[in-house]
Image (spheres, rainbow, N blue to C red):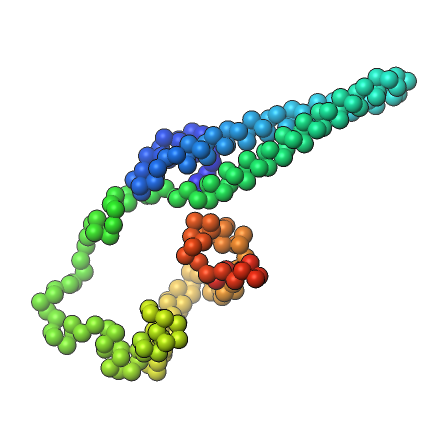
Length: 231
């Protein structure tokens, strides 16, 4: 999520960066306006609280001095200020929630070195490692899904029947190879990372904190009954 402080000091920079991703700047302007409103309301609320505290002290002094009528008048003034403070706090909470939701939906800024482009066709080739298309024989040009099916280590039909397209079933050495690759990655990085197996289902606030929600809610799977999401 973009730090709201950047909207106060670098709003045009943020808008220009998002424009590189084809994101219009209207949401940035709206977020900046909401942030300004939050700060105005917060100042108003804090000022009212300060007045209420000062009046409370005056009420105490009035009672001590035997000025009952003054104390009652001050209490009435405090109640009126309290109503205004409550209204300011309620509006602040609403505007803060709207601002947070908007900031969660605004994309992150692209890195300066990231190339501009509308699709993968605009991706520049940085380097090619040892690829010579003429050096591959006919048997090396067979797609991996055909090789896997021939070796009976990849079962696309079973995967489609169970889960739909793009879900293969790995069998025999195919399953072994997949597990071995995961183990190899863990072994090669065991000195630098701690292995963790998190729960497969997480709460909404967890997925929000990781930046997936609300932007990618439509691309995520949710167990609505328990308000949990598949990671």
